[in-house]
Length: 226
Ligand SMILES: C[S@@+](CC[C@H](N)C(=O)[O-])C[C@H]1O[C@@H](n2cnc3c(N)ncnc32)[C@H](O)[C@@H]1O
Image (tube, rainbow, N blue to C red; front, side, top):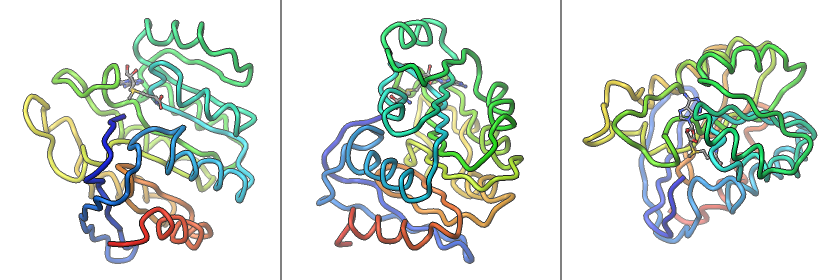
């Protein structure tokens, strides 16, 4: 999660041509990467209601802010955290009864969570930076997470935080070889379903084709000018 009020990263990905276009929008004023704030919070509540989604899965619990918000929207929330301290403290501070906290590396824990789903779910893939900040030791489990989701028979709604870390190689002290390119991210995400994908408010959002028109409308509302 990062906080800034300008220079939002915005891009649109055409599903057939698979090109990316990077734009900045100083007028957007969004709180980027915050699931419980506009515009991502609006996306979550709107798409959950419109497409009748009751399951939410998060990678990277941290303080539990994202999953606590999700617990107000979805009947079932699962969150995975690699850091024991964060896992325990989030569990102790979140009172919502419909959150299942799991400890472990999302790359190995997520496949079982995905197999247990019986319908389309919403995913918030945010477990790729330690303690909310990128560091040289952070590695990115995103491709493994997306591969696990692609093994599901159901089309899902996928939000990936920190698009800026994938649209261009991260600078030092990151280890760029540990971070997939935007092409690898989209190819893996779209391995089983022809998701419509956009990048907006520093998030990569992939939705089933049936939800394309709704996502187009959402983007036009979030970003009325380019
Ligand atoms: C930006 S924070 C998550 C914020 C949270 N999703 C929210 O919306 O409030 C990133 C978290 O991901 C965790 N993390 C990093 N790598 C992970 C991995 N491979 N599996 C699970 N969690 C991971 C970090 O320990 C950190 O707590």
